Image 1 (tube, rainbow, N blue to C red):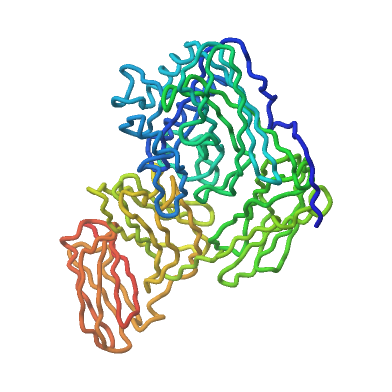
Image 2 (image 1 turned 180 degrees about the vertical axis):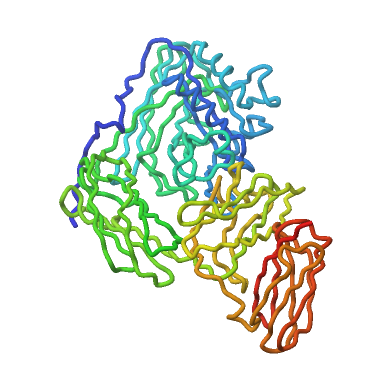
Length: 589
């Protein structure tokens, strides 16, 4: 397909008016708040919120640079790496002693430091910033940026005008930031829930991605009053940094002048223009998603697509199927500006289950004609499977250190809670403890289990490796999870039928009396002789009694001394030759 090479400056909501030339009128200083943060830092979302509110209240005067650095930024299993090669050096010179920390213009404010350096705790940022905003600046900055969409290059022109005499050690810094990066964040639900996305991820904004001027900036040789400095920098934009996509529509440029490595005098940001789009109409598929676990053979797909052409998109036609059959089409109508993204839900699609299913979604037409770039029109979701449980199901929940934060509940198809549990006791250190719960389901239908963590960091975030399973009586796994989530995670599963003892060699079983007081008898009829093992557990999954007897063909009795058992429901597992039956007995005193 022939590429349409266009040079288009898009005057849309993506852009603001050009800033150059720089003002030559003396102004007060602007604030550069460098915030040291990390995805596993509990109180960092509170810092994000304080900084965001401060910047919003002082638009055009306060600029944020979020630097992911240190132990809290080190990614755990499956987590993204938001760190850069620049962050450690900046953090080290700040003297920070805790997170979140921040510097206001890398200045030292008496009595406000965490230690002896420029780093301050979040409660001091606004007060220090207001001091900076009241000070006169000897230099003004302005900048414009352009992104060549075909070449994927960023060009930034910065002008600095000295209204007074500057320092001989002045350095110009140009930072590339990115907004709207989705990822995990400990403490988000407690401190900044409005920044959580519908899918449970957190929006990371003003994230440092690159310094176009290097670690400590570019030297400015002449800094006397009346000097105009103009510099142009170019960066070949990579597809990703540390595996995290660089989304050009979400980039932000901030420039500032510092005296050496410290003492930022003032700074500013500027608009970005987008030119040289390779296509006029190009709907780029960014992602497709759906349930990866299901009960009924139907899916509710969701797609995210981007206008990667120069023309406004008014319609996109999608085709989608499961396992290559039963294709459906859907046309979205609206108005999508260049480089903007859109998330939509596609109508429910039914399919035939083949065990491991794949959803396929394709862009067919854009604005009523074939998409000009077919190379980015397709996305798929694989490994979609059915969770189906037979017989007496049990939840095994392995708590982390903070059991008091953990609860769970099972809902039936009507949304009613039919089983629930937790919270649990906290543990010392980073230990774990298993809890077994018999779910006692009766309705043959689709259910869902939800595991919740009130703190918002799941049950496997570095304080003990929590996990969970739903297993059948034969110990086979219906579903499982690694415990890595934010506030909650939900799994659908189908409860199919109860396996009775008549389906095993344990021909018939019962417990009497039930309810029991001092003692109870488990009576079993066997088709053949063999060893019967029994285990009794309470509602918390703790083993109360266990043993074995040699059974004979016909009726067999196992005596359970329940006098010492606390009042409550107990589950007695009877097993012979690898086959199990679970009986309930209610103990009253």
